[in-house]
Length: 440
Image (cartoon, rainbow, N blue to C red; front, top):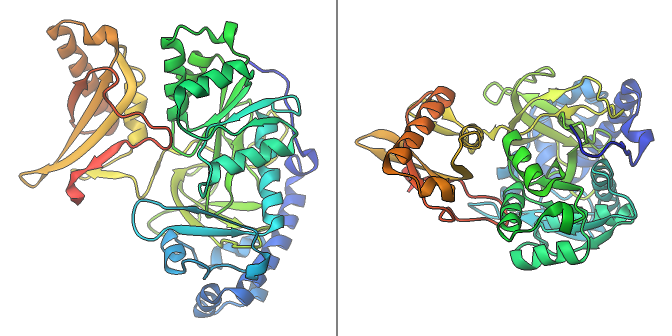
């Protein structure tokens, strides 16, 4: 149950729009963005022509399915400016993401793009209880990464006092949190967990020393169990936010205090769920790959961009009053999914097991290797101080418990390696959970 009771909505006219009215608005904006792409981006024009399409064939959101997909590889192939649909002199900002391999990707924003993005984040901040009286500490990284500037500009739009801490320097983060009276924290969930643990280890009672009410956490998948742990550490409402550089950055979707999925800002982006193999659209409620089409972006619109994130969409009404569809928590990625001895394994599945085992800290590393032509999975699990000082037989029982619970969830056996407290590397950005030696 949410600790805050008052529900706040930043833009009621948009966020609570009648679904039929929203559909008409989406269709109008879709027609305009398809025309813009066809006229200004050679890649889209060539792909539409290859499918026998012209902009006049796309009349409503029902026609979305006929448009070509866009992949991250397209952004690298067209690097740096090949997908820009606005003249260079109208691009007022570049954001980007280095990724893990290959060329970086960059996204260009016009002044109106920045304003629309700020509007989307303002809705998320307001949903978390943010107002012009709030003090919001932004611990996402600044720079090309969209996290820091994205939350900063949204918080500024609602008139909040913003502390642009960026990532790193945990001791100073906690000092500023206490001294400046931070009441909303914005960072990755893994770093929030680290901050909360450090806070408790320092003997700080958040009720007595802090004024925290909520956290807006995103940029990496996290489980419901991790949410509960963060809420216990800080005694706050921990809310999810979703975004990606290619679409807008944080604010594409956000959670309200009901905590039943993230509301997608459908007046700016159209979400779809597709079967990642057949590429066919799936109905609401089906689990599949999330696809987005931007319908208000000018600098670099995206048509049917494949995120590779696995989730579901829910169109049932939310008690908060918003009418936007909600996307469920990301359960994994089609490109981060591990296939081990023919079994699909997502890190989030393993995390959901570990956070419910007593004596285990929510920090882990998955190491995959190939021995004698057979895939082997090792799960390195950090234990608590109390468990680490236990007897050998106690550690063996803990190992067996984890092995049995993991096998029941993921369907295969794994080697469990219990490691000492504080030995799994901590992350101030996105947590690194996988080492796949099969690729070396």
